[in-house]
Every structure is written in structure tokens, then in C-alpha cells.
Image 1 (spheres, rainbow, N blue to C red):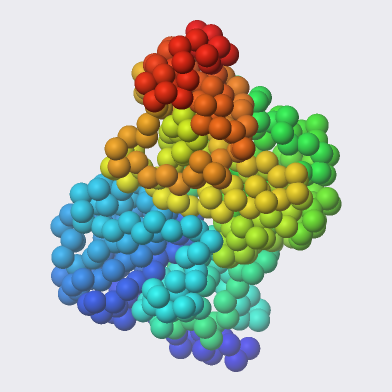
Image 2 (image 1 turned 90 degrees about the vertical axis):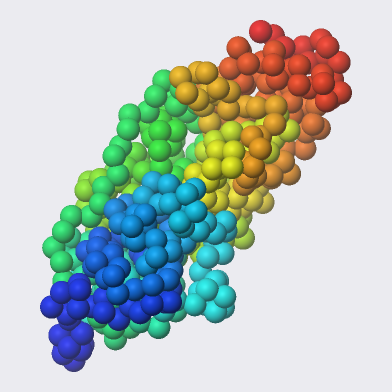
Length: 443
């Protein structure tokens, strides 16, 4: 039990005491998702009067990033490698930075020294009998950030579950501990819409017995998963997964037996959801948590035969360019793992990459299938990478198709009231002549 002596020596009386290690000009990494260490983040913010020009780097955090509020702009400069609601306004107001990068490539920034981490603020379980703490529900890039950081402060929480896989750090790898007993941040689960249900009906037939899937979280994945209850021997290799997978695991539908890599396991980087999901992954040996440098590596993804990767988008133009991280010039989210999985599934034997999105936004007043992306909109998935695209009006495969063929296919799954406008754009661009796109122009 020599580790316990070390743990007691490193245990701080308060978060304020632990955060004294942060100095002006440092770069601080903050744990992401449900691992967001709210107690440590608040203690960091409280030090604002003493600090200047501290970079706070992070992914999506399920908490209140008070350090991103305007009154702390001289003290903290957030750097979002994936933009969440807590920093979106700060990014678009110029008080925070956005670093576009594939999720699979972030950890190499730490290990190569391209993005050195002075201090990592992490959220862990309490130590086990051997002196190891688990990052629990959120491994993503934070395990690597902690191992690369010069100094590590852990919010060690009774309520953080220990999880299976590459999730552990030893007490000796952490410099300060702050004990807490607080619930993990939960994500509101919204019921899938009628549009999501129709999209799910088009995508579900692509997922056959023995497939390995990546679905993420949100209305469309939640709508798809119940359609898979009659499948056999599905596998999961994913960045994250929703609670909708639990009934499939319990029923034996998801068992991983046919996976061509890491069989019998649900391989993932993190979970977001409610307490039900967090309790379900607690020491549940079907789950194999890994850093996102592994889960999202396109070459690792491609080693899974029959890989079906399903990702969402904000809009797509009729040539197949997919925008997922911005609304025009306004940054909204990030690259995340979309292209990691699109490219990985595209190289999988019998793989099927899918982009799924409702045909319209703002109560049907705006088409998400557009003649051209909005000025300033970022392309996350390129024309050459896109394969299947699904809306509530159908599903099409653009891979290997000409621009004219793509336009016809995408117009066919746009909302009918926008198809004429899209066709007129094709005629203007001389991609077709009036009446040539017969199928698409059936209004």
C-alpha cells in the first residue's frame, strides 16, 4: 500500500489549493464530455484576478466553462478543438480560438511536442486497491494529454465509474488530487423526430447481420438502433455510443462475435448520456475503452469488415460537399471523428459510410441540400469521400458518380418544395438541360 502514502501526500484540502500550480502564460488541458472536472474548472476561474493569458484547451465539455465568459477574457483564452455550447459564443465573438483537426490526430499534438501541455485537469475514479484511477466514462484524448502534461491535477470522484480498457493512470502519474463526491454531467436525451424515424428506415437496411457499426449520439442514431433488434452478431467500433445500444447488448444482438478486430468487445472512446449509461459501463467487460487515436484511426476502422459508419451534417451541396462544423462563417462544432470514420468505412471490406441529415431546417423553411454551401462554410467531408447520403425522403450513393449524376440523386432526396430551385441551379451551371433530370424534377 505504498501508493496510499503517496496519494495522501498529494491529496489537497481544496481545489483552490491544487490550482495554485497554474501560472500566467501556461496551457491547461481540461477533460472533456462527462469527464469535465467542474470543481477544478471553477477553481481555475476563481484565480482569474491573479492570471493572464492562460490558454485553456479542450474538446466538448459537458459543464459550465465559466472561464470563457467575457469578464475573464484577459485571464483565459479558450482553445476549442471541438466547439460545444459553453464556448461557441466566445469563439464567434473572437474571445476564444478554434483549432480544426481530426479527432484521431489530436493526441499526436501532445506526444510530438507541437502542443505541449503544462497542466492537465482531469476527472477520475477513486484509486483501486493497487493505486490506479480510471478516467471512467471519457478517455478520448485526455488520457494522452495527462501522460504528456508536465503537471496533472485529478478531480477524484466517488461517482466516476471505473471502466474496462485503457482507462487507467497510477497515483504516481498524478501530481495533485482533489476528492469530490458529485454527479457526472448528464446529456438531455431528446425524443427522435418523425424525420429522424424516416431517415432511420432508409439506413437500417444497410446494417446486415455481422456488421460493425459506428453511430454516435443524437436523434438519428437513437432512431436507427431500435430497427436492429432482429439482427444477429453486430459489432461496435466507435468514437461514442448512445443509450439506445443497451437493449441491443442486453438482447445479444450486439455481441461482437463477427468483428474482424477486437472481437467480442464494444470498442469506444467515451460515452455521453444519463446516469443509466454511466452505471451500465461501470466495470462492464463488454466495453473496451480506448483513446481516440486508436478508435478513430481510419486504418484501424478499415480493418473491420462490413463497417457501417453513420454521421450527421449541417448541410450538403448538390456536388456532395458536406459541411458539419459551421453555419456559414459561424463556427458551430468541429471536425470530430466524422472523416476518420467516413474514410475508414470507405476502405473497409464491404464498408458503407453514411451521411444522414433531415432535408430541411427551421421548421421546413430552409433546405439542407443546397446549390452551394453558404459563404465561409467549411467542408468536413469532401466530394471524393462521400458515399451514402440519407434524408427522410430516401437514400442515395454518390460514390463514383459524376457531378450531374450526384445532382440528380441529391435532388431526389431533397424536400419536394426545394427541388425546382435546385434543378434551376443545375441548368444555370450547365450540368444539365431543362427536363434532363427527369427523376429529380418529379415535383
